[in-house]
Image (cartoon, rainbow, N blue to C red; front, side, top):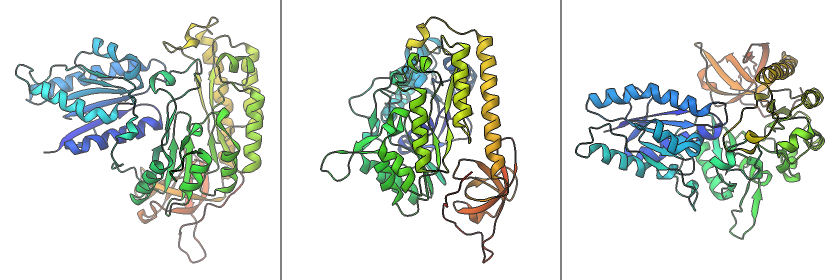
Length: 473
């Protein structure tokens, strides 16, 4: 008999990928994905520790799930409730203390052991006197000597036209505001042969665009596939993946300025499948704040990297992350961030946040915490500037026909949704047969979250597949 599995995914694309892999490892036990937690046999919260009050949001969700777990038990069944991801890694024991009805807490490096944990929880629930709902309290947040990638099965969960592929995990940078080195562990790169094999599998399943994932994806240095030793960087890996028949587009996220090397810049110049869009977090425009963050690059070094990338790929669109209100940030430091944004112009999109302390990180102990009202004012200023730049970027595209890869059906009948090479979301009236194809779409009008377009026809009247021609915004 099939059993229902519901996973709620918080946070980044890495968590989206991990949720799909947890689905894969549980499939041999008879679990199939469910759209809602009601009546599910397993509910997993795959958590993220980046946002403010992340743990409290998890406990809030657990409180809403407890009545569902109790109702399942009253009906003679059992709901296994698990918490996975970075909050689980950071606060596993506290989760079991505050929510003893949780059955499993597992860190992001232990997903390959999930079937064993589930089997233990199911045996405990079936034991005499267990009552079908007793908290089993399985905790597994160890960083194993092996990696989860050594044991995960072949990707099975359908990802659709645009797929994620994790190539690197962990972080050795130790930015003072970030919990990732403590929750994801040291940097690890998968062997190139494994990455290529998974990419081929994804393409065979219908993927036409693959986004390579990692906490610092451009720190990738995976074993070369020729068996003669040595390693490949991300640029070499991109070139190899671009040769896979049927794979039209490649992207990668998220990256660190210190790991942008000559080989990667050359790949942006030479590989048409590598999309002209780059998310490269800078966090601040102030060298003093960058040093306090332990970013180990200056604002000018970041500018020079951008200059080199744009020289290699003139149509490159940028995205970045910004933190405002970092401890000790003065008005002058904040102005330096505004100046950097205005100079470089993060056209396509950007993400900005108020600094919030993360327990266990060095920045949480720094003197000079900025007042909440000051952080809120600075965030509003940054977001207004970034939104204006994104709006100008999108408006500059209106009237042009650009290649759009249609990924899914839209909210309205007869509508498809896709993305341009610059990650702009586009919706247009189009037949379902164009799903998974890259077609020319004339951009008509900017909405709040997407651009309206119309499919442009070729000389023969058919909106057929088109090449990813480079174009300047």
